[in-house]
Amino acid sequence: MPILKMEHLKKYYGNGEQMVKALDDVSLEVEQGEFVAIVGTSGSGKSTLLHMLGGLDRATEGKVYVDDHDIFAMNDDKLTIFRRRSVGFVFQHYNLVPILNVLENIVLPIELDGGTLDKKYLDTIIQALGLQGKLHSLPSNLSGGQQQRVAIARALATKPSIILADEPTGNLDSRTSQEVLILLKQMSERFHQTIVMITHNEEIAQTADRIIRIEDGRIASSGKLGAGGRSQ
Image 1: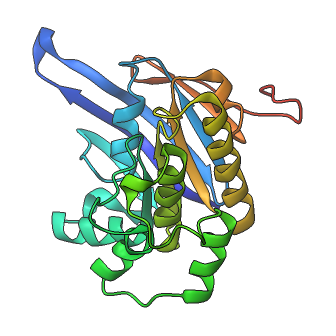
Image 2: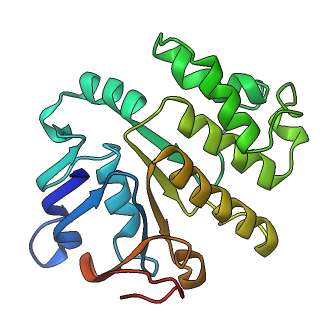
């Protein structure tokens, strides 16, 4: 059963001849536990699509269902609460709070929501991401790769329905990028976590279970990867 579903999704800007179709009738399903990469060049619509999936922006037309919830049927307040509980974000620039230490950054979404902390689960993801020795460090004292690990832990901590990763290795060197991608893959498999990642890098996309290519606001191709890393 799909955990994420888009139906005839459109996002248009402007009118008449000046209209820009950032997304033009996109329909797509993502299964529970699937790791999907959305690949496209700058301006292809991939970032707009990610914003739609996470409820960060509203569509011109169409629907997005996250765990059977029609997110665009919610008002702004309800959508904010739903997004905080059900969608984890991993951004290119980490988006950590500089005055909070690693542990405080990880649990921040749970505390903002007034939720109950699952300490056993939290310890599991902290150890899985190798952060147990950094919990009291500030982000400024961490490398880029370590900061991105914190961002992944924060995204996982709320046990979201989906994680959306926006160019998660864009600020990292090639070696650290590979480490972060391996961790994302491991987290997907270990916690049966659904991850949708956007990237312009074909090599990075090969880490995923399925690659979706988007061009000019439309899906150009979609295929699962075989054991050798080739689309089927």
